[in-house]
Length: 126
Image (cartoon, rainbow, N blue to C red; front, top):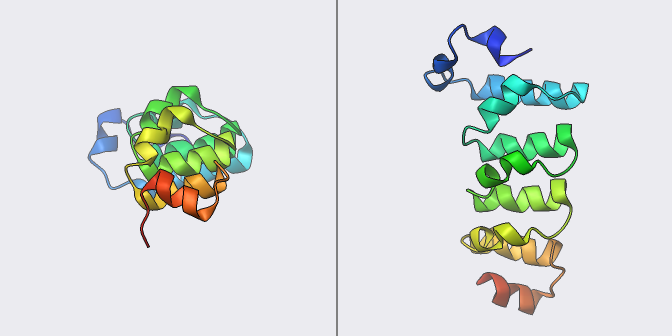
C-alpha cells in the first residue's frame, strides 16, 4: 500500500496520527523487498526512526539520501551504523556522542573498544 492511497492531499500526512500506518507500510516494503518512492519521501521528511529501519530492511545498506535525517538522532544513528552500514559511521560520531548510552554501545559494538576505552570515548558513567 502506498501513502498516496491513504491520503488524497499529502498535507494531511502531517495532520494525522499515522505512525502505526507508516510502521506497517515500512514493514510491508521490507517484506516485499521493494522500494516505495511515496514512503521514501515521507520518511525523508525528518523521520530518522523509519529511515534507518527502511535502509536496513529495504535498501539493505546505506541510504545516502536519508543520512542527514538519521544523523539528527543519536539512537537511530547508532542503529543505522550497526545494522545498515554494519560498521563505523565517522560522519555521525559527534551526534552519537551526545548520548553517552548510545555512544558507549557504539564504542563497544562498532569501534570494538574495551570497556574502559569505550567509557572514555563515550563519556558513559554507570
